[in-house]
Image (cartoon, rainbow, N blue to C red; front, top):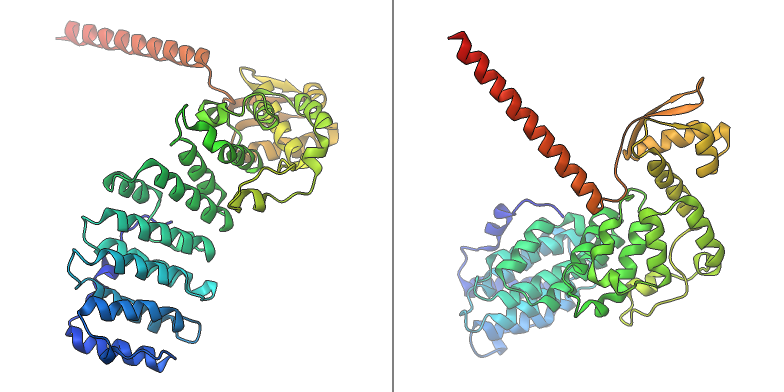
Length: 406
């Protein structure tokens, strides 16, 4: 999702045409595209006529209308909704958003729907925060259904700000984050999908963590499967993940956090059926029941490849070199495949090194820490304190030199 605020498109929803004339134009547009609406037969205020228009939207929103014309029409309806008195505007706003979201249109219309819904969030009165939340939720659901969340003009940071400003209850935040995770997942955006999974788990406390069991399992699986994720120790600090302690998935996570390749191979030998079964994670991820299924949702070959890199990182920690013999033994890689393995390891940006073929070893420049324990924090503190002491000593020496030179 993009971070820019669509101020220019917000202005487009306002119209200089008088409401009665605008209603006539909207009625003609709808009748030209198959609606039987007749606003002259509807007695009452503007909100009564708009209720009929919104109810009948499902009969005209479709592929037969060019995208640009449809967007102008929907923005015109929106501009009339904004003329309804604030004490009566709540219901029409939500019904309008739901009508747009549920419209039976092809995926190519998704970005247009998102633009209209984004306009609606920005222009409705500030006080009706509950309705703004409902519009945002509809926007995310629409993005999920059309696989186009990255076409939305508001990003994760803006969504989090709105949640804070609108004082959204925790359970509704969880519903929104879960929908955002699913929207990013179906769009193939694994990085943002994982971020939303972590945001979701972070909303649970020790007392409510059990409710997020399925979400925690999903987050672990997503992290293990993501080819760009190698550091996972932070997951162990999340309350919903702690609930899984002792279970199969939690054991697998611990291996990816601090274990070696052989630890995984031993796990695989004991859990081969669960890893190789052909269940579908789509049912687990997106079904309303959210039932657990036998398949762990991970692939053995992919796990082995990642665990080889993680084992190499662990072997290289605090080492200036790693021998070919160690790589052959610990990573279980034949000599003729070591070079290609090192190249792939460097591509992960988790390690910087170079190969010394003659000496049959890998020279280590730097590595990323797989886990950051209390001891690592203590070590960092000591290094910073030493650095500070050295700077103070240099500063004092400079003062002495400057003083004696006067």
